[in-house]
Length: 270
Image (cartoon, rainbow, N blue to C red):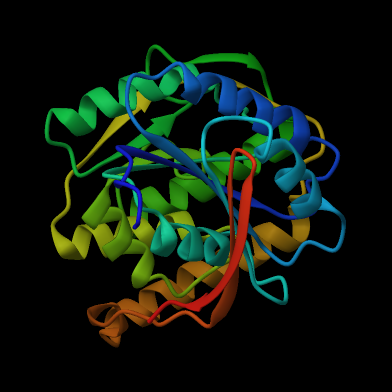
């Protein structure tokens, strides 16, 4: 018999995170264990070539919060990893965070409060009044992020921080948005905003505490060019009505790690 659906799914996209996943996953487990309701951690692996998943399984079997490991073949991009993670998530409320935990998990309480009050989804912002940046990104990277946000605000949706890797969704809202996602590079955040606007979903922005972490996989020149191309693709998809339909996922493998139990189950999301 399937276990009851948890209240919260914490979805974490990963790609070659062997050097920091052990510490991050332990921190996630320790935090979620203290919450007075059911939780799960969903690790969505974007085709890692190191031992990311072996580390995840090793840590997962030693803590009480269930961890679900999702894997598919080639690297497709962070957006695709989240697409798979949201499709598989079982929680009533869905939160995604980057593996580096640049935004501390304690910030999640403010997000869940907004969801409980009726918001469809919540965006973390490093730009709104009340945000606390304890360590900034390198100046060039930060400025390029500001340029991308300016472009998005003037072409897609008026938000102060597009790319902060900490957001929360009501279950059906998150699943609907990610099922329509078509752009998987750095610009996927902008695409989600456009899809949400089309669907009439309402969001709020919440200022967060944030600290830059070493080890980013962002390639500034490549990713800013791809993001600009992504904005063009998003506008074209919108004009052609492509967001009116959902997109199926290909095959992926899931391994459930719940305490000492580990069962591999291949599956296909339709």
